[in-house]
Image (cartoon, rainbow, N blue to C red):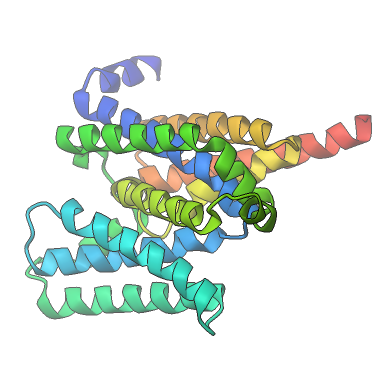
Length: 280
């Protein structure tokens, strides 16, 4: 097994997949804690469906670089979701459900009506559940992921105190002069970027797992925001590495294997938390 792993790691496409997986897992875990605490967990699911619809439109238009179309449209929908939930009669969860289901349905409809691909079901399955092969990660995608992921990490570090304030007590943060709405929009926009980056790796239907599971696992063991964030990041990166390596050795889909590792970690942390309470 070790020799087989060494053989695979000698190939650049495997290293590219590991780099992309780690970067995406790190970024999603940083904002995942905030989304869970603010009860915005489903916004990731909604935006992933929007990204699917945007990719379908880009495919129908035969755009050579789909990222230039999908990324701005997903960020725009993230802003619209937040605005719709706050300033209209439509509740936030209802707005997410309407936009996500509508985007998913329209995307699939457009693919069926206009797609020139001979393997429509394969393309749709790959987009929804992630690519079954890690060969799809090109050098350009790796560099783009590295640049955008670095930007996400820098934004989180620079605005950590503001994000912390908006996460725990938005009314107090607003009263103390913090522009809470602006930081909510920033959080939603960053999540949109992460979702677009993760589309090729885990698929649009599994992205929310990368955001939610590490945060929920860390919350089982820790209470402070900083401790939960650090634990969530470390756990997310570890599960991503394990998932990719296991998928290489066993031939399973990358995205599903990473999510399975996150689920296993959640149960392990839940058991450890119960043991900790009994001992304490």
